[in-house]
Image (cartoon, rainbow, N blue to C red; front, side, top):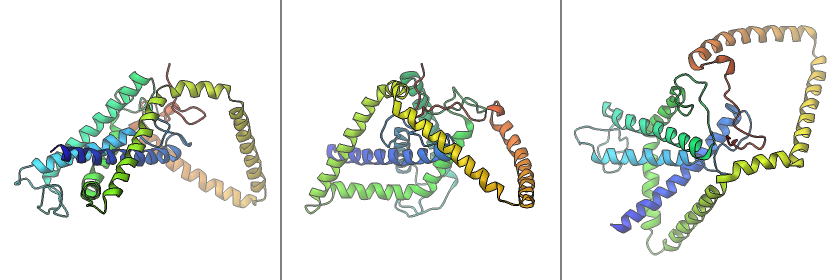
Length: 302
């Protein structure tokens, strides 16, 4: 029994760190192209992991496993392969799926809220800011982004759940049922996981004061100042090159382009204003404050 609990713990730890790294990649891409519009490190720590996503995937997995294993057999749940945890009844989507979906959805929102409050109150860091979105609570959660969690919930439950379960079972067998020929591989895997967690824990501890240190470094760094001046010079050169290119384009072509552009912008502007009124408390301040310094790290609040 102890060995089985230990085995489950190892696999859950592997899933957690996997979720941390995948979530980090997702957030980096999202903030580069949709939110902050620049490359930033979106997490509290320096390394490529966001614990919120690691906890998220573990929560979804554990809740799904608990519900599926303890649900009455008369209430059939989604099971496309007929091999999902202890459930062997093959089934498509059913009305009873609303129960695990709702529980997972609520837990994900609570997880985001608790994580946000911990960082704001405990570490004086606001990793995300929903304060200008309607219906927000303390700027930490809001209906608009909660819908994203619902989408994640549905994608996981109906799309990823069988594959995550298969990954869990294969990983379990790989580590603990490999036989004599796989013993060394299993040991190496566990040691590697231990090294990763060692780096993770060190990163967490060392990051507790990283924000204050980086702020002072940014103010004192001459190299950073030179970099900023170089970047501004490159922007100016790019603007001049664009202006010279536009001078060579015939006026008739430019006029037609500007006219079409104006029509598209007017049409998009009406739709954008309508959506902004529904979503934002103050549409004139669509973008929440920039929570990142010049090095792309979250700013510590005083």
